[in-house]
Image 1 (cartoon, rainbow, N blue to C red):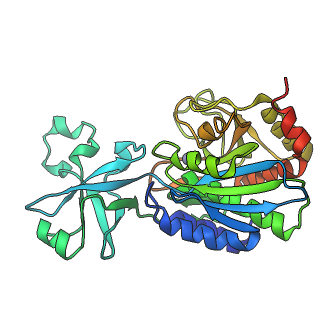
Image 2 (cartoon, rainbow, N blue to C red):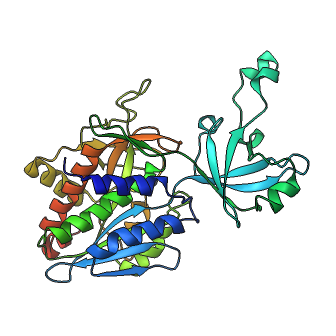
Image 3 (cartoon, rainbow, N blue to C red):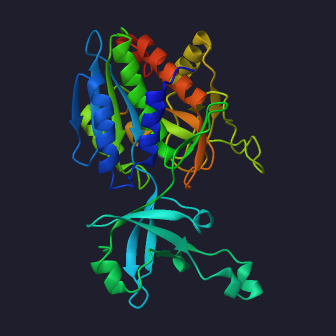
Length: 365
Ligand SMILES: [Zn+2]
């Protein structure tokens, strides 16, 4: 494993940064600072995505790597007149049961405000109600205000303010495990940044132009991927993602085959894309030749940015490389640095072996 301490710190900063879909600016700044030294140029779409370019030997083909910067979060939907409690709605997909009792951060026009997601105290519920699942619609965020006026005037809260989970990054230090929020998809963002860094510092030769895009608004419908496709017009695309790890109690291997520590996942199917089969075989062959561990995975529901990339222009061979991660879309996910390192190494090997002829072969009949 060759992820350095300073790089693990960067992963921690990315994880802890505030960036629900549509509110990614803080994360974008970290990404911009981390990547600009290792790229030839930096550009932007007009939705908030950051795009780095690194030219190899010739200028073709155009290889797009992309990780989405946004995380699932919430917005304030109302402020209770009498109590100052906030009602809130999801930005992206949430499982209501992971919310209660957790801290969140609300970014107001004045400052960041800490709140707690709460509901009617269970002590006061009749037994039959206590057994029931509490829906997000009956939860509220308590920021410690005593009235709507105080919440608005003193705390600066307004309807539409973004809310993100508040949870610190932890490097477990054993077996490469790390714990943190927003690993979906700050891990993919980190993998892309590390690929750019290693390409630059290692002066790695390849004939391609590599783009790394940190996209926005993936969790609300792959929106940044659409605008980035327009800017880059890629010849081949890789969505750098997390994959839902199945090595938790109650999951059958057939439901989620990937496990932590067994290498990055090559996604063979998801609801938004069937990958180009030639490209898939090419990536698998490289992993085998280079002795990089990998896993074949499938996700029946949900999609990734590759769902847009593969439909861009007249079509673009695309695939998803994912880092197996437990407990995504919650306050604390768990992943393994060894898998992250393997994903970086796999992508570098792929870039070295890609050229114009190879890319054309992906779509030749
Ligand atoms: Zn994702």
